[in-house]
Length: 541
Image (tube, rainbow, N blue to C red; front, top):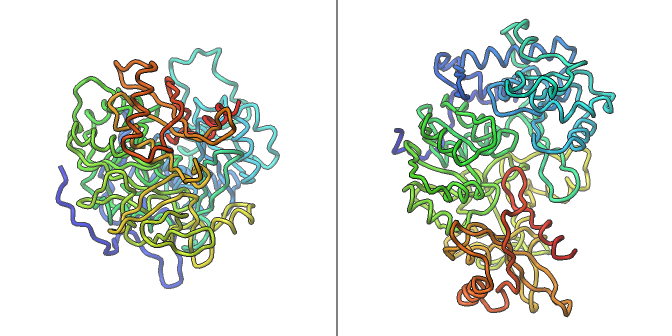
């Protein structure tokens, strides 16, 4: 088991920094492993398949050459609707190496979102996993600029023949790649050129296309993967967060490849059994999840071990301190909670080894700066809440075709407006208070939903919870809570009163939830974020 990693920010020579002219292609994050002599080292474990760096770079080159042979040109967009398999990084880096712009998107979205992505990006090709093809079958004809539909992989063997969609007008990507050359030189991109997009997950409306450049990946691997995690080629990464998400893309693709480590992919939904089964089988050393997943894993009544895992990481939403404590007590492994964003590509505030304060988002990741401002743009004193802004070299350059949103979010001096409200304690740790549009006033006083949720989570009956604002019979704003219960706990009036008194005993009285709704589950995005707006809508209906 790797251990005793020294945190350092010295440049990693194998990452091939841009030359004096600024020429740099982000595919070197994968390809540099050949120059480093790691060709025969395992890069990816996926179910029953194993890919060495030789095999993975060979496949990536063939994928890039296939796109070129189909007539795509540098700058053309390639939409990726792909499961977590070795073909994902092969398409991603193959397209970048050929000068094209891959766009991984959330595979769980409905068809109208995919049609929007294709039209918004003017994608010339879409690569879709075979078992996801039914989602796009009826929309590809609505996108005139789309020239190629490439199906990756085979249908599941348990899918009846009559349920398999017609593949008319498509081509099998792996077969085309098998006919392509395994040799592909990197397109001479400038490090600031457009390299790939990710679509942000908005709470309402269609997501925004977030444009990232070639340098951005290298910045996150140097500053978070090496600067916080101390990742080395001896590590084995396992991310339960999917690769299409900025968080998962770093955890399972760019971070391990940047140092020649290995990664394990779980193509399906991360169930409790599959996550623990993957840990038992492959013995990863770094595990990545979201707060919702950690809460779900803690519900297992079976005995499980984390094996060789030396650190767990969490992002996508603030980790309640009670979840951290339960995890640490049960498994003896720290969770390094942090905050990142699609716009910044990965985590920029994080608890760090030896510097953990449960409930906080930690300190700035090396290489990043953060500040908290009031509504007039003035930095607030420590202890006061305000809007969080962050600055660092992985910042996206723009929202595609959204100049107004770009101007609002990507501000002067390189500062990125996150839309999160925070305060900073006297030691410099950042404490999340909620999204700017989730904060509300009760009796004229600001209430942070996260603060109330963290107190509720301390109660032994609570598994998960979400706090939102609603109005009472007099039209006054009041706090309301939705909760799911631990196994064995019973929802009744006595428990509701007990939970309300629990909050009253720890917080100012006006913050306690006037109503508590017991539910089987909370509405969430595919990346584990609680969709509080849906709960608010339920109160209003």
